[in-house]
Image (cartoon, rainbow, N blue to C red; front, side, top):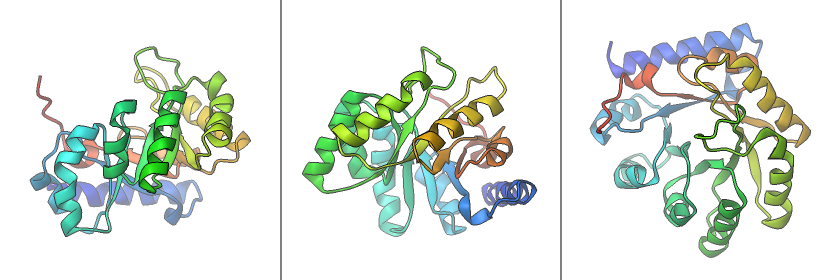
Length: 223
């Protein structure tokens, strides 16, 4: 299968999951995750009409997406990996959406850069639903307080929540927890679900699903 074949197959599976869940497909956005892949490998997806992409690293994204954006100005780029506060300016310059807001130091840095640049990326708070020490995200029991700080102290407009469930656990309880936190904080956007579990995420209310290997194929990580 070509990369565009995999994209089309993924979109068909997403549409079926939406139908099975009695959801409107227009309410669910597919983010194609292109970390480690080159502009040459991404271009067929752009030529096929896909416009929403996700990257994990600011430096990698800022090196390859400006040239693609020059040719395809209507694309939408999401940062879905951890963000260091000293990379905030570069992140806001590069990304349309930041999904990994997870601590007050970063909230402060984002607010300062928004004030300076007058750019307003969409913002998602990342929740570490599995309380994994090696993973980014605010803890579920601290989420309400952190969301309030973002809104009231730093005047940040939040779009929704994001999570990455532990790989060795069932995803559904984590997606349900994310939805619960979002509901009580009046947030409507949920970024959850990846290649192996996006159908479950759609059943539980995902509005963004982040699919990488199912479309891009296996990655070659440089060690």
